[in-house]
Length: 314
Image (cartoon, rainbow, N blue to C red; front, side):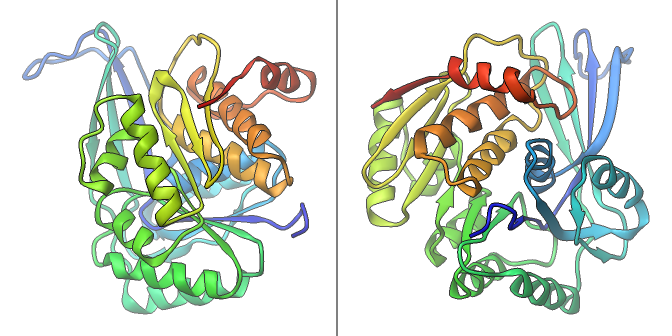
């Protein structure tokens, strides 16, 4: 695959992310908001943004409500992301994060978005298959909107892989179960999503490693498990890497896991080794954790950060 071949991200249920900061969240009371910001979001959109910041060519697709699409259109124009979303009637949902600055805790309120029709689902499938080619990465990320069953994801994965494309999935619950059953090249659960997928309790790091080894050996070639402050585990059939960033000044966790996946996919697009992909992924996540908006160091600063990432063979 050419380095210039775009990565395609698919966000079936995007969201406008609104983050609201208060000094202390007290249920049933009135709060003075210290800071608030709204931005185009959804897992695939977040991944596409970080890819574009890193210099990768990226196409963002999925379903977008036509009633409030402007914030997304402006975002794609600002970051240089190719907009291939299918417009559907209604509004894209809003996801509200209430950040309690005193307790350093976040409360999420996720609203329901617009539902695509059967014709729009067929149009998306046709569009994606036109983009499919051997070796090109497709990412299916996030939750499912009303009206779409997990089997749609499974059938889409099978069609894309049948055309020779590589498919990554970052989802949870029934959608992730369907994706794994259909056969994918990469998943990126966090430790809780991994436990739910396997139907087991993962009490410690050793349990997580054992679970990823079994899953990689039996059902898929590549996994990334994000573990918050513990770092991330990168697993293939014959290699396990635990990767950590240095101590950070965390400003917001919004989009950090998506940035991790963006860095890994960009490294794959560039033909990097697993270790270099893991380093790049960690720097992308690190950069996102330290900023309220998507950002990425360039040039010498990026190189310096890549060297500061700790990589351990487990």
